[in-house]
Image: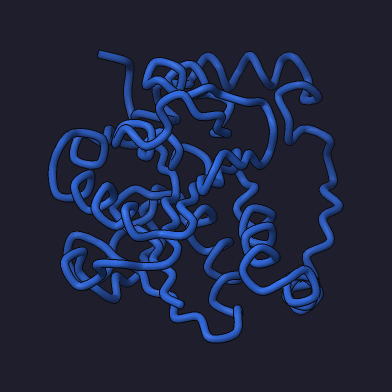
Amino acid sequence: MEIAILAYDHMTALDAVGPYEVLSRLPGAETVFAGVRRGPVRCDTGSLAIVVDAALEEVLSPDVLVVPGWSGSKQETLLAPGRIRDWICSVDDHTTWTASTGTGAIVLAAAGLLMGRHAATHWLVADWLSDLGALPTARRIVRDGKYLTAAGSAGLDMALTLAADVAGARSAEAIQLLLEHDPAPPFDAGSVDRAPAEVVASMRAVRDYIVLGGPAA
């Protein structure tokens, strides 16, 4: 079973590494980071790089595609027609599952794959998802057909959900225990519904800088 994780400049590291930590441990899985060219790509903080194992043209029919999100830079190349979009649409014809984390759902929607489908994304860009014809849903994980989308930092949970579908609940439970994934965050501020109002307001105020790397055009 081949699992392809799209890797590109300015992606959010957690969106890629979280699913990788789970899916790479599935029995018989071959997990590859695929990108425009082989070599390192810088994540959105600029201080961490992930190595692309294979160029897009080398990964033609993965069983699973995972598209991580991004922040902090405009992504015309990622969202506009071109090599990445063409590749996503091409491999999606062959996947059993196509998944995303955070703003990765925007990438899938821009490729036309979520039209009329329910999907999760980062709460700051839910309106953008709607503009692209998808149906934003305020849940951490949303399944619609073969598409599995996750909000914000829910990449680990999305991958565990996918692992259970692929290899059974017992395998997914074993991976969860191996990773000791037992969340107990120090603050109850991980949801827009529960975070302090002033924190939500501060994030909305800098939304364009967080998501696009500057003010909206």
